[in-house]
Image 1 (cartoon, rainbow, N blue to C red):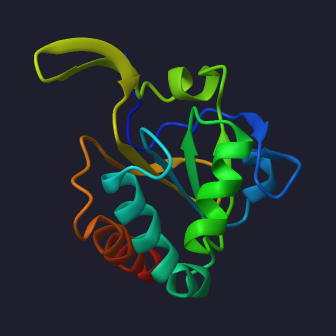
Image 2 (cartoon, rainbow, N blue to C red; image 1 turned 180 degrees about the horizontal axis):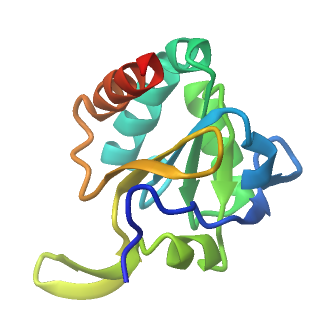
Length: 157
């Protein structure tokens, strides 16, 4: 059962790099981008995170918060954040609860091996907590820009 556009975004409370728990409910009244990525400081994830970071001011102007989520620990997230001077919070889902709620945890294939992992997926959530767009199997190049364009179009309505 995958999540659908216009369905309510599953709520959660999860450790955040701003040293406390983040709850999706904290962001009611703002747009939210949740992007799920496989691993801190790997090539694709670094490009994706840096691109969201570069565009953060533009997202904020549209009343939108950005959060990256992976199953890495907060310690790993802190190192990643400091290394690339990331200005938004990274969320640590070490127990894979949120990943499962958002249906992004699944079988992956790499070099002939199958394993469980995070399918790179981005959700755009509106100010009332409803999913308004989903990007699956994200290709990192220009992804953040595409998300920003989508948000611009939606926020004009």
